Image (cartoon, rainbow, N blue to C red; front, side):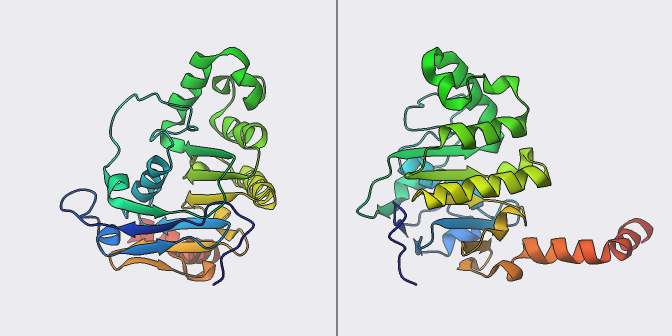
Length: 241
């Protein structure tokens, strides 16, 4: 696959390998190199498969805060991120992003609190209101609509946890806007809606390592489709033995 020159950071990761966490996660212990060749790349896989761990390492390796935010966010409420970023060699493209942000669902409250602490004109970048004054999902979309300016590098970690299905469609539209503005997006997700973004690269994390798969072959798609097509039978199996 040829690299798309419309996005900014043509990452190629080379992994070293040590012992202990997170190097004992099967998907990470079995990979030596990853290339990012699409404007949008998804990480999919079971809980604990290493998706968020790798996404966090990429964020830290690119100079972003481990808990989320931009390069200007230096706060830390709990030092829990792994040392994986220190054991990855980043080969970047020749174009540098003018904007970058790590949107992490599990620690977004801390990011919103840091924005309030900074105060001043910073709220203008987030819709002129404290993100704490909005619902979780509304604050995510306000961030995407107002703060993400394009020509950027954006990391999203399971943002569907705060978004209804219809709001996930809104998030897809915002992602497409960013791509058309020559941005690159890497997202860890369990959402079959977000995962349906066209022409994305999808990396599936498993005990066998990390491999690229088509949308229809992801477990996310197959399990969701099977449930929606056969939910009465699945209900019977689950609840009636």
